[in-house]
Length: 356
Image 1 (cartoon, helix red, strand yellow):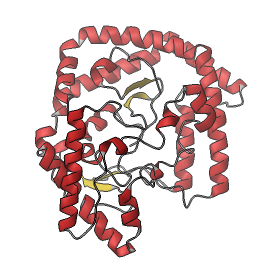
Image 2 (cartoon, one colour):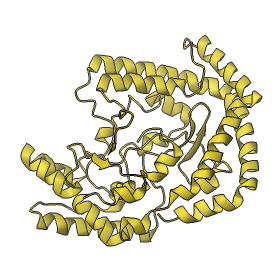
Image 3 (cartoon, one colour):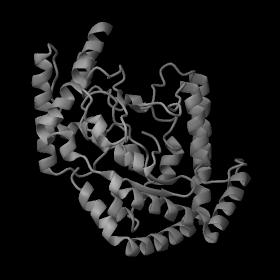
Image 4 (cartoon, helix red, strand yellow):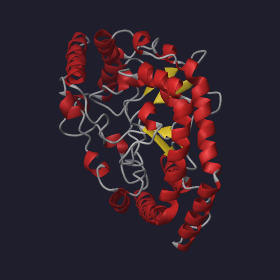
């Protein structure tokens, strides 16, 4: 999941409720947040992953480590999911070892995302080409990675099918057919294998956990209109122009929006990996992490990483020179006014999505 629009992220929650509990594979793809230390007025209602970014609109993001402070009840349920998965996989003829949720919650990249933004930029740029997210779950601490790796190619396919269902692919992706309405209920029809059965056993049917986001469509539209008002505020326009001039002085010309550098790096990486967005009208949706860098030309990848770090470092400096303060001042004032005007709807959204 990359920079996904707010509505689409919301409508994917039913599927991701299953995927987020995965102990083996790469079915949850962290997206680097903007690492803001405080919550904006709107984020108080929309959740921890809510990020406002000029040029990129509102989006949802997660840190590399996922949920930061799961409750003991959350951990207990995840343990039950793991135990139920073990039982189901054994019945299917495969070995599966329950992974303690405390272990699974610690990403190998957590330390990186705890760095200050400028330090992160110096080492990882934006974390796009510099981090191979396909390796996020394939570490030596997960016994199921070793178990699967020891199987023959044919047996690995059977293992994937048993664990994640017939639509699972070798890298942990799951292809989900979209039905009419493109809502959470369609994903509940999918066979998600032992993991899906275990989640259903512990958390209940997907329909019980899903949220009717259709009733929040008007709120989502108003939020998008709010973002447009922020981006077109003359103070933000002037700050963006100054940022663009600063980037040009640093050797990165032609950038008009502050999200342009990220998008350009992502496009270059997609070209290297052969990763293509779904064609318009495609009725399947693949929930997956980015492709592995294993088959990417190492020289070209190295060059892209150098380019990413260089532009990210310049970006951080140019943002800090005035853009961030100007944008945040406009953003927080606009969001506070928006919250005052939409308090009832926002509270309804927060209550509806709580504990989902």
